[in-house]
Image (cartoon, rainbow, N blue to C red; front, side, top):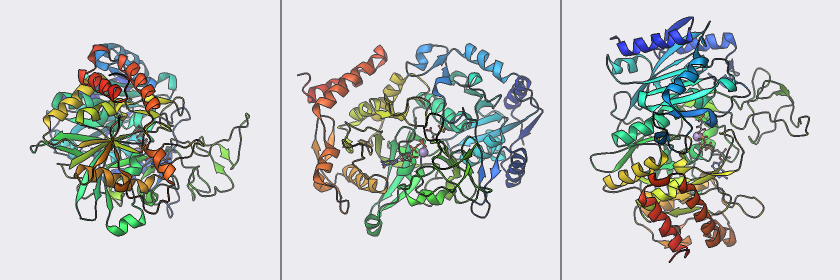
Length: 593
Ligand code: GTP
Ligand code: SPV
Ligand code: MN
């Protein structure tokens, strides 16, 4: 194989800093997987589950302080602070390298440094980006092999002079006070130290495919988004594709793998999964928007009982469950809260402590068996609803873009933007309640533009501008919608059944995209005429339906004030169009004449 001198030199430099005992290049072979798995079992880094019930499945527990992305310790390192923008933590590149070097210094002593060449997107596709991750964690190697394309195939494609993202990771001491997740877009470099948790260490995912890729995408004229991609086959056999952005733990995977309720599948509705977390989108020669999923696997939350049965089938063969699994008797049973099954009498909790159902701590609070952000990984090839187009280097043509979040109040079940520009405004002003996927106060509503707050690698105001420019370049823009599966009644109960029933909303969205139905104009956008929604068999009281679609003027006036305050943080850099859209909303709400 031809050597890539710059790559060899960089590996040498990093080895000089981290001082591993040896260096192993990952080739991607099956033999290598077996050997690494055996090694990881021998050291206790992973534990095999009962192989009859969970063939190929391994269990790994991260440190107690290492169970979610640490947004506070995540930085964008650009020369100018303004280039990172007001929504990112910023360090100068010099300061970033200086601080992290202290933690990397000698961090791999006595350990192996693995060199993982990987490719986000099909190898050889013009969509794709190559990275090389150096890591001292077998857990990372095994999971990168599930989540991305790795090994010799990628190195061959990289050749002697190809561009690649330099990704350096060390578990170091797994000390939260010595943890940093740093992005250097100007150097095409990522440094992550002191963590073993999914999004912090599988550097192809959130770090490369979102934070760095957003910056590449802006420069090269495409889009890197926190979106699932799915195809809906309607009874006429026509498949239309949608991309949807929801914040972490707000239902992307569930929607991407939706199983239509019986009445719908009997009629011929099917959902085809293309991706569940990240979409890379380009305008093709037809001047329409096309999307690929750059990953090859899922890093997912185990399913709730109401979740689609398809997800229950997912962890069936080779996969590496990470946290939430609670294990019992050589792990014959994998259990978590909310699974809808009685737990066994005793076992170990996610911290590795003995545990019994109903246990409480010294303050009388319940001790959870499973951590709410524990996850499993599984290869995409195991997804029963995977789309036959998923590996296509060209991707799929996007008819609709959907934004959504968790809002107990305010936001209707679904509404449609008046235009692309209005849609960008809806995305830019999105808000959602905080979930267990981030450290911080759960349930608090925060602005999360396009579900990209933790993932946009440059100034968010410029990102809005980029969205606007992309719209202008398209001859037929996808229609933009907003959904909210999480609206509640006075008693805190969800008004909408959600999950598989969301097909009803997708159906309306696609009908709108094909101009099959008209809609009702409100101050915030188009909402469905109830007659055009198939609500058959749901037995929803009409007050519930009214409440689901209610646009409460007073609440929206308050929301508009909130948005105005939020926009302040962007100063002059906020695109004029966003201010104009904001005024448009206020005019429609009769706040201004
Ligand atoms: P990340 O992988 O963290 O990005 O999360 P995600 O966006 O893929 O979320 P996921 O599909 O795993 O859903 C997270 C949780 O949201 C589920 O366990 C459910 O509790 C809830 N959820 C998902 N879809 C629905 C829905 O339609 N209705 C309701 N009420 N809850 C839902
Ligand atoms: C998320 O939190 O959005 C995830 C998991 O998908 S992680 O990759 O860890 O960020
Ligand atoms: Mn997901």
